[in-house]
Length: 282
Ligand code: AHG
Ligand code: MN
Ligand code: MN
Ligand code: MN
Image: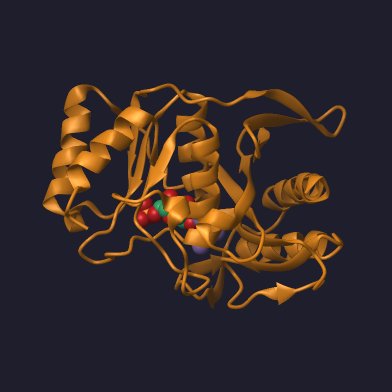
C-alpha cells in the first residue's frame, strides 16, 4: 500500500508537468461514458498505467478512460480504479483539475475500498491520502518532495454549497432543498471540477457537494469506482458523510465498471438535510 501511495506521488509530479507542457486541446475520441476526451485525459491515463505496472502489489487497474481492467500481477493484493484527469473540460480555461485513486481489495464494491488518494493540480500541487485518517501533503519545489501539512477534519456544519447537475432537470424537491440552503446563508462554490470543489469543502471545514439524479440522468453523472467511492471514503474518514440520497455510498456495489450514482458529500448537518429531503423518494 505504501508503495502504491509513493508511486502516486511520482504520477502526480509527471501529470502536473504534462498539464504545464502538453497540448491542452481535445482529442477526436470519446471514452465509454461518452465524454469527449482531451489529449491530456489519454496522456494522464498512460502515465498512471506506466507507473502502477511497476508495483508488485497491484493486481489490476481500471480507469475512466479504459473500457476494461488491465491485468498486471495475479498475486497482487490490490485493485486500483482511478480518474486520471478529473475536470478535464476545465483544462482549456486553466482552472484547477485533479486525479482520483481508489485502492480496493477483492472487488470494486464500495465496502472493499481500503484507501483513497486524490491530487489537486492548482496554483500548488497538493495530494490528500485517506487511510485511517485524512492527511494533506503539498509538493515542495525545492526538495521535490511532498511535505506533510495537516490532518483534514470536517466540522459538524459548513458554509459552502456545490450543487451539480443541469438545474432545469432537477427534481422539484431537490431544487427546494438547494433553495432553502441558500436562504440559510450557504454560498455557491461550484467550478465543474469535482476534485477542487470537494477539496474546498474538506479544507474549509464542511459544506455540501451534490450531484443528484435528474430527469435526464436519473443515475447522475459521477462514476462509482473512479470518483464516488474514493471521495466517499475520504469524507467518511474526515468525519463527514457521503450518501446517494438514502444509503451510505460505501454500501453500494456495482454492475458495470463505469456505473454512475447520484451522490452527496458533506458534513453531518448538510447530509441530514439531504436525508430528510430524499426520504421515501428514491
Ligand atoms: P471528468 O473530467 O473526469 O470527466 O469529470 C467531470 C465531472 C466532475 O469533475 C465534475 O464534478 C462534473 O463532471 C461536472 O459536471 P457538470 O459539467 O455537469 O457540472
Ligand atoms: Mn471525462
Ligand atoms: Mn472525473
Ligand atoms: Mn477524468
